[in-house]
Length: 296
Image (cartoon, helix red, strand yellow):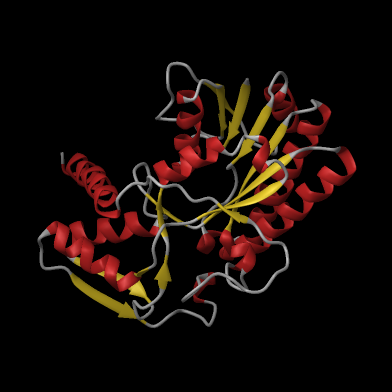
């Protein structure tokens, strides 16, 4: 079965592409930049999701679309609402049109738990809009979908737009972690490898036309994560908690992303998952290697 992964060069998309390849799918990665993680078995298409002709040709012969493309950073989306509309909403709609024309079997969309929330700024708005568009495409055109609502991801291949990667980088480089808040904010961290494998496993009929929630297995205060990083690095790391920049805290939530909205999703729960400490060790090794490369 042929799968095309839009945004497949990025943090989450590249891991999902790998999980699909490992499961035996024929995978094409479509991204605005070449993937540094491309497997020999994967095909690469460098292109913009707003380029309808290139998208149309790329989708031809595919059975399933995964869409991870667009602006994925809350702060970036908050500062660039027009670009967020273009790449997150218009870009996704271009993919939906191509999926309908080529009669694809499934459209898998990367959303966020922020769609339940009043937080998340324009990022949440764009994801909520896309979920609504996808639902209407199902009703009007019979396009089957699965919407994946991700929580707080961490793991290898992340850059400093990812909060955990940023915290580890600050701790290693500056011996200080700066955080806008008091550290008592609750997160359910999920390792990207677990999220990627689960994102592949939802192609069964059980998750057809469903909203699936991927979050961690236990709650952790941000402050507790910092202590864990400090203990693992065995260094004197300072924590600096600074006032939030706005009432919306650039769109982030404090205790929970959930605000009552009647469209409920299924939470995907696995019995086996990556231990938080082991996952952080892999992140630390990757950040350490990057720092050493910068110095050389």
